Length: 158
Figure: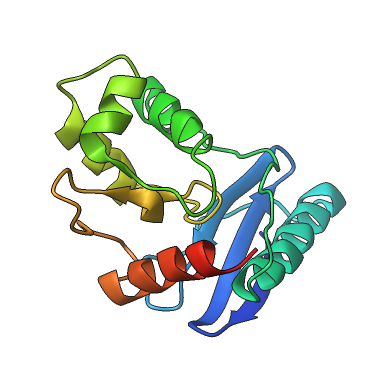
C-alpha cells in the first residue's frame, strides 16, 4: 500500500494511493482499517504529493486538490455527488439539499448526506463544506470541531 503521512494541527493524516489516484485520506480519529493500495512508484509519488499539499492547506495556503481519485466501488450517484462537490470553492458552503439539486436529484438530500458520510477522501472531496439548510453544521466524520475549524481556516486564509 502506498501511504504518506502529513502532520497537521489536528494530528497526523494518512494519505493512501493507487496508481490510478488517491483512494483514502484518513483523519487521526478514524478507526476503520486502511485498505490495501498498491506500492508502485506512481502511487507513492501521488501520495507524497498530496501529503505536501495537505501540509500547505493546513498551514493556511490556498491549495487546489486536482489529483486523480480512485473511487473504485462507489456508486455512480455518489461519484456524481463528489464530482459536483469538488467544484465548490474554498471558503464557500452549500446545503445537502442544494448539492442534491446540483446533481439533478432535488429530493435526494438524505442520499447526499450518506455520500458525505462515506467520503473516502475528505478535504480532497470537501465534505466539510456541506451544511444543513438551516445553516447548522450537520455531521462530519472527523468531528464537528474539525469541520468548524476547517471552514474557519478556509474563510480566513488563502
